[in-house]
Image (cartoon, rainbow, N blue to C red; front, side, top):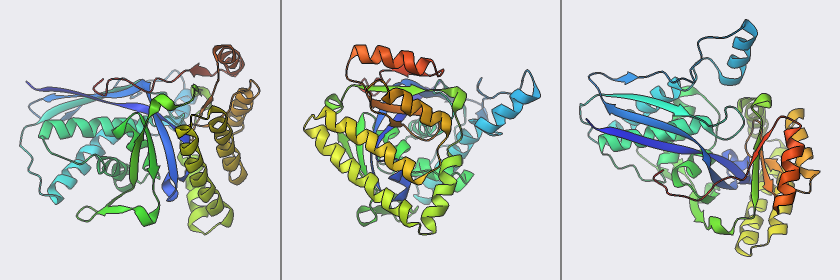
Length: 342
């Protein structure tokens, strides 16, 4: 019996977000401390096994309502099922032959949910990796993030960008350019992709990551209104997207020069730009302000309840943990480098 085990790690948007869905530029890092893992093995029928994360029992109706508000009605099962469907669509369109063996597939994830660490896309990327291995097909790495995004956009109608999927496919730290003039398209399946450049993660400044599941919210709460304003031609939103791209280029230069103070300043500028065009969750802003009160820089790691920034030393990190702990937040030094197979 063939048993396949794959994974995809959480991620943090380091600079430039949320411009990835708006032809901008970003740099992201992988967060190896959390992962979605998929197990696939030969089975008499196609079977998608419910994860322990798929809640069906609650202590009260209020708990049920809170779960639905945060996680929706279908959990990760719909992500696995949609990935399988879109994978088959892709292979049929590309005339990639698929054998007729059947399988059982299940996932598990310890990525904090709805805090902006890309837990949903991690399930999709891990599932896609398992299917690629099981069927022995070759899908280029630059195409895999676009196919993963297509699962959410085409199959589930979820508004999202490429950034999360790119870093989860490539891992480490990656610079991404989504400028339309540099965009390429797979003509047969109409999958657009940008320019992706792995960076030397050993040159990154001393980072921290903080999150709170208690103040998480679905990303569409932020992105749906922003998308509407962008498509309506809102001048402030378009100017902010250009600024996010500039900040990304400036951070890339500071990274090459190992200029920690400049990188820290740019992270703060990214958040300040975001705040200038969006109505932000007050609990999330409180996390930013608490982190900055300790002397650290701070910006959103995504859209949902996680922040990232530069924390220069252990003494400041201890102060940061105490201050954010008062808000019910967890704080870690993210693990970025490691064996890509684990």
